[in-house]
Image (cartoon, rainbow, N blue to C red):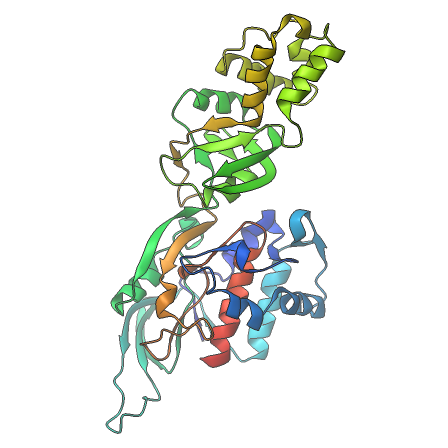
Length: 379
């Protein structure tokens, strides 16, 4: 039985990937995940891997396509993935109750012969203004986490963990846009909607993908990826020309194209609107000069900044826009093989509520499929 608090199942599936659902990735391994225990996810990912999920997608005749970095999306609609999962539930005799609120969970004691009770948990439910009580042998907590509360994100799973005395790793928003409160804020507002490929670095991590300026700051795949490694107060470094040594490019251009204006050269690689904003932000006073009139020192300073633009976000946009929640139930108390709590028989935690967070690109869905399968194999 599935107890769903929302009025519909699969809301996050339906909205993911712009409505096309990035359901997994061709290349999945432990390096795509963040956890206090980086090895914890390996067992579940091996037990049910991306190829097994892809096989199920193909069996159900769902057309899909590969995009950048091995990401797999439905060609038509995420509704196909949800329909597939519901069909699988129906075939397995699963009952789904929506609009169902669990108000209390209690563990039952073992019987007098010290054998595990057939029913180990009771759940008090509230549904359509009626209350009821259920008993179960196994209880799987698949509540998701704090991200996107409008789609049902909540801390309910953490409350259950705390009820049973399980430790939690500090939570924070992940895969989330950055905001600024300094001079960059109005720049981002004016550039809102502009996208470009950049390299983003923070705390020893590096990603190269598209970045998008927004009226609040910066977003796009590369920003969401690097946000998982950012903490308040950290700098984020952007390389606006990731495939070019900008210093060498400018110095060589001075030799070969001395009469070309600096501004004219820069707009060959960057949007005109961005070049204009950088002129004011970096206080470049030679933008309208011919390259031959610019000193090597001036061009070097500009080139270095193009490859190494250091920004200090004031904050992220928080759980409202976060695609995932970092942290969660400490994996030290969970079996990596079964997802069962080691000291609490019959209690399982799977998916985002656990301290395992994937990169952008279908990895968080794959963790949901893999951890859920592992629990289902033993529950």
